Image (cartoon, rainbow, N blue to C red; front, side):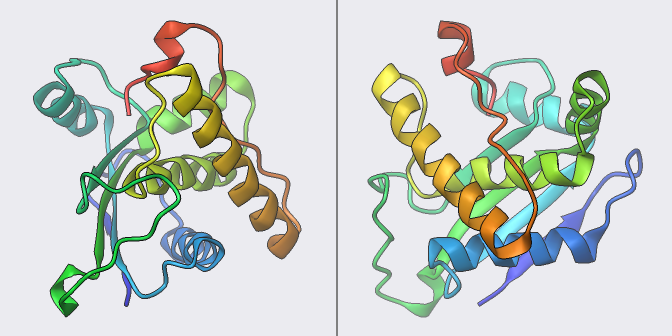
Length: 173
């Protein structure tokens, strides 16, 4: 199965081959290679529009996830009955938003994009962060994914998800 990688924006140059390789590594770590997955790169205007429509938050954000399986339990892979159900869903990356965050926090853009993608894929796999318990569970999963990614690639990525306040628990993604 594969990754559909679309770049629907022209604001931020995207290294598509690098992003595809990073997504393939994340899929390997998670054991989800048999599932299709969409990664769509959009600008602030598009991510804000999507965020407004689906989450009623009229602001740009770093990532929005649209799972194919809405009721999946965190840590459990779906059990599709048919070939056309081998789909996890789509992750929209607000690449302009991520770039601005990287510039403000002196972070590597490509590394941040990979970390944000891992976060989005966690949402496709049923992880949430609306409560303290969910935040802890998702944070631990992201930490594991990125530590494995670092081990396999020699990089030093860390989750971008920080626990600061109740607002952070309900961050726009």
